[in-house]
Image (cartoon, rainbow, N blue to C red; front, side):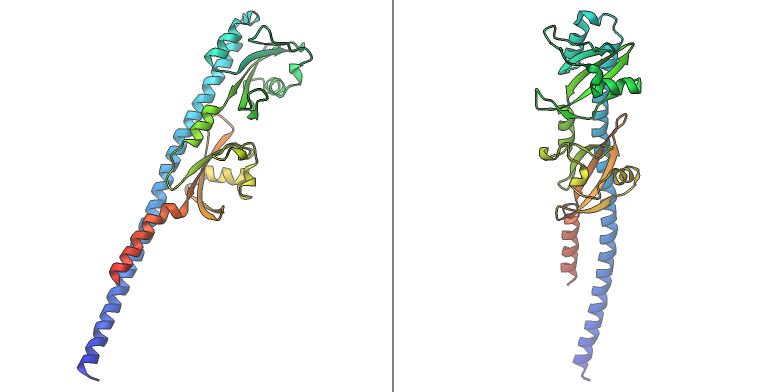
Length: 275
């Protein structure tokens, strides 16, 4: 064996050992940074979701307070209080129905002949609960917008108001999540209330992905880390929060590849330097 070939073997061995050591260190550093990135993004997204959820909760509380204030008035027969609440609370309409089947709203010209409030879900739900209730969102026949009804029993009547949830939709769709993230608002039954694709509103969440059912969302809310789903041919990181004082939930979704892309670029750069 010549001294030249021996030197080459020694250099090759040393080079492979150094390269292997650098790759091991780089791999360990990558895994550590990856976990830190996932943890940090989880905390960031949870914080953003909680902020958005609190805004929605505050909005609901304001509307409930308006209906509660209406229920405490003694002179609703004049329609003035109904008119004031409609304007102050930005309701589409404020109205009341009684146990005799009479119905009136803030507009003295409204005709409710043949309309029995006692047969309506808002009236029945409020009476059954014996406290203020919020209906599930529905499409309003007159405006074509997504609305909900807030109703409260008082003596032999139920007072209520209809309101669009445009502000709620804006809050959800304008959440600035990293990695092309977006939010979906649902109720606990899994019905979509707000989605970046309006065509999916009022559809079941399971239509997007069969795993997304009520039990799965409950687990996300109670969990402490990302859950991962294959969704629309992409790997998604998902978590969820409960909207305080409501039966609504906010599903938060990130693109995993987008989130980890800067880290992957850094890893390949380190491998190139090693080579």
